[in-house]
Image (cartoon, rainbow, N blue to C red; front, side):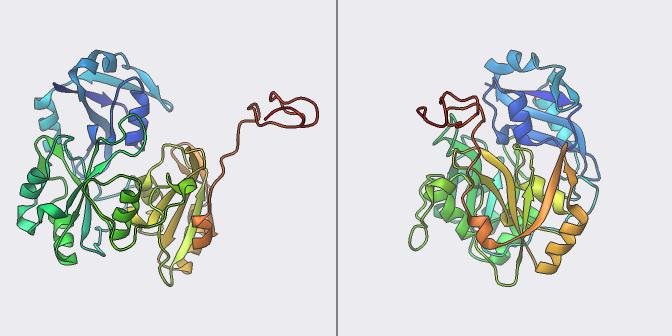
Length: 347
């Protein structure tokens, strides 16, 4: 049986990943987290987290636990309070975390990504929810986890191919924060390329890649949303990101200067599968690149100073080799690894 707890006192910049890490001993996914917003669309510092009732007591033990420099309160809650608070909550995405208006998403293809879907939801239920958009059940694809302990299980997301780009735009404009059961949905503009890439990693159920299946460099398989290069665009490199940062954190960070979509952000992972602390962003032009560098370099994301610099498509595609610990087995010379002498030990 499902239950929920209420969190209060969160940092306004808190992400789903930070809450997952906060409840590290409990199996909580991104789709289990619902942030609260005020009437202006700004975070209130409150959130609800859904989980199996067997884990409720363990969750409550995190009361007054630390998240960054904040002590977060954790309270028992229920469906009635959740529904009441959702009725009062503003619409996330109307403004960014700095209070600046955020442009509506623009569909460039007839594909949308839906987040927040109940794990047990069927294609039939999703089709019924979007019945006004002439959705073919065969064009609904359930996304699956590709890493972690839930590999192969539904991730709480789905991709929907609609008949036209206009229908995709209508869905983005009118179905944001609609509900399936008790879950509020988030909709994002997406693309065939994103579907192909996820499918190539085993992340889309019942989906066959369009045309030839894209070749995926195994060393780059963990990168989030590797992109193609648009003619005339410019590229930014962000370095020093919190390891928990997601694509929307980067979208919010850049919103002071320019508007980008989630699809234009690539989060880099190293060859060991760990986040590299880097992201590459495709923006409208080289002029926008310079504006972002001038206004955003060394600005804060959460508690981190972010380096913002010009980049290229080629650099965005390169493999990242995370540096090993200086105390690991691979340390040579005068380090503290297990090798002896001048690099003659076994590594």
